[in-house]
Length: 365
Image (cartoon, rainbow, N blue to C red):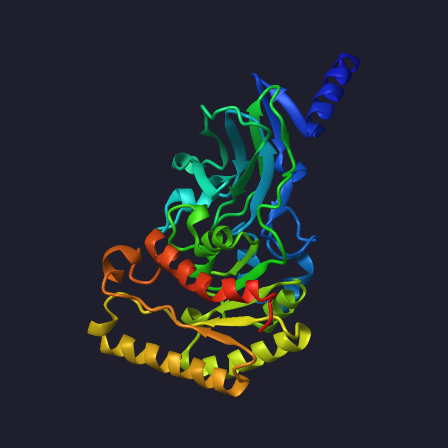
């Protein structure tokens, strides 16, 4: 009996290891056989953002959040008229983000006018489902050549495995066009940088900024823990970046901003001299004008950041103020703190105004 089972087990084992297998007319390809962008380290495991060697150099909570796949993008090219995906995540649900943002996937395609949205892979929500499968888009016209595509991974969950499925006989391979060219832009920040509270992965402001710039953007946003930790500065310095963006104000107290900013920027510039560093001011939250204690705190934080800029010198950093307007309470905030999609677009647009000229100048400060 055991002898009869062996051939079956061998066949199953071989099929399990095959990177592309056809099932029910669908050819499935493991995403690891394609191209992963948005991560600055080749030695990071799976879909983590930081490698194991940084574990002891950063706070434990930051290490845990680095397992979230925020900002990671699977790039591929295909002539398929339909794109499916199946993937695994944890069961996390959050009270200020949609399940699409926490555990879903976003698909974009590159055309003559840039990147455009095609659809979202919706995760299972009820019953603690962690294995997901979804047809993202169907009915596409047959292209002349191959479509370049980008699949944005979940913002607040860890991904175990991802497969992309196309109709049998379709081409599915690594991308041919650059899509995101040149050295990356690195953004270090808080939950807002990680993606709260965008409605889906492709609408976090680092993702929007990347499409606006046509540049790979590495998301080092860590919810509630973006505090200018030296270990993250060491990690950033390993990345051959075109621009560094520091957006950590919301997670810092007013009395620690000045010295932490000076220390972090000084260390980063020593390791990466000449690379522009952009400091982002704290956003103004909805209702700030009617909340005197909050307004006083934000004023103190902004003043502290400006003292840091004065100490560093204008040649060291560029300061960006992200102001809120009267509409912020209506359509730019999900919970009084984290931006909606509208707020994310506004944040990305303000950064684009500053970062695009730096890139055009050849990343000269």
